[in-house]
Amino acid sequence: MVVEETMAKELTPLSSASTDEEIDRRVQQTAQSTTHPAGTAAMGSVVDADLKVIGVEGLRVCDASIFPEPVAANPMVAHYAITEQTAELID
Image (cartoon, rainbow, N blue to C red; front, side, top):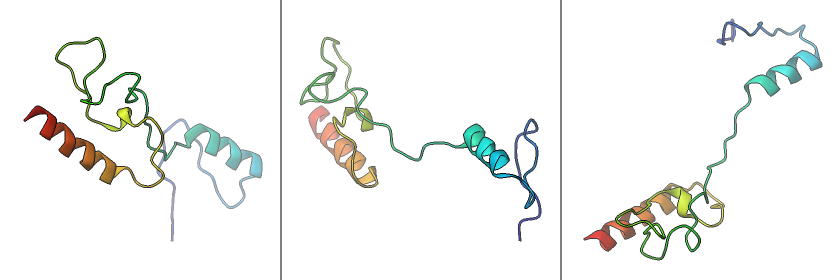
């Protein structure tokens, strides 16, 4: 059984008597995304096929930012694949 909420000091505790509006406000104040951001350095537009940043010498990107489209599942396996590929390119 939950006895009390752990929260930032500026928030007031919710209870079973809290209104829908109070609950909605809490969600708006504290909710976070569970998506895995990607695509900020998309392959083909920011990095080339060798994961080198286009126009920058000596810099490669090896993370989810190179995925041009979001991964439909947990991206960890795709991260591993990119890491392995990058290791082979550098070796």
